[in-house]
Length: 310
Ligand code: GLN
Image 1 (tube, rainbow, N blue to C red):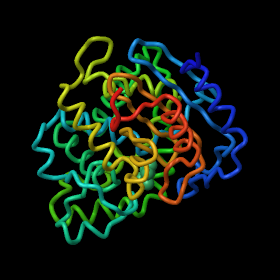
Image 2 (image 1 turned 30 degrees about the horizontal axis):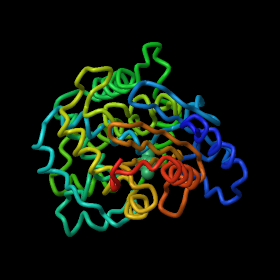
Image 3 (image 1 turned 180 degrees about the horizontal axis):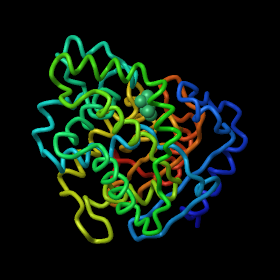
Image 4 (image 1 turned 90 degrees about the horizontal axis):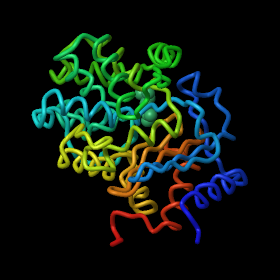
């Protein structure tokens, strides 16, 4: 019988031979230095078994995947009040798009585009100082991942590079401030946002950190969020987690997933598995080219889908 471990090993081997590897993000300088040859995959099963292959233990910049954790923390801070300031609809636009903010009065379409996540950071700054918000995020993700040794970090070089080059994000934040949907000083909000994006961890750690979304809000039997909140976060990942490519991701993979321009994707099969893949080459929408292909092959071979009975 073919096991999950076999499938994971097989997919990593196949990825070595794929020549269409996408383009590594270059607008954040440190990301441009990562080799497009990298590929890692980690699958954490509901029973705790972990299957990894390729560069699964190499830390990478999780970038927008951090928006999932920022959403979880913001909901923890203000609950459903959050939805007065951020929408829940797919944008059909690029992750850094500004266009809808004009017609929608500074309310971003969803928490997973840049504008949305910048609002999440502002929400957290309604409760905490920037340092506290950043420290709490790091502790939260380490707790989720069971990273007692503290090997998950925030890469300051990446955060500072984003600060130096993040003109679009500055524009988004200032524009929303004009509508009153950013309340703290823009530099402080973006400082938090860039540090969240600069979280660095491996596929193994990321898949571990996603377990609460696989298991109805629980980690190791302890409730981190309610089951209904976990379900809603998964729903948003499915509808909005890949920007203007979210429909295609749902079509090809059929699982909640969140991508980042570092080339990572976190995806969950509720009740079954938490999966992280990483390969830095991106498709036209800024989602990992090989990461998506690997997930597509994984679901084909396992039958995992939220759209099909098991
Ligand atoms: N830090 C990146 C940015 O703000 C995150 C974008 C992404 O991962 N899609 O542009």
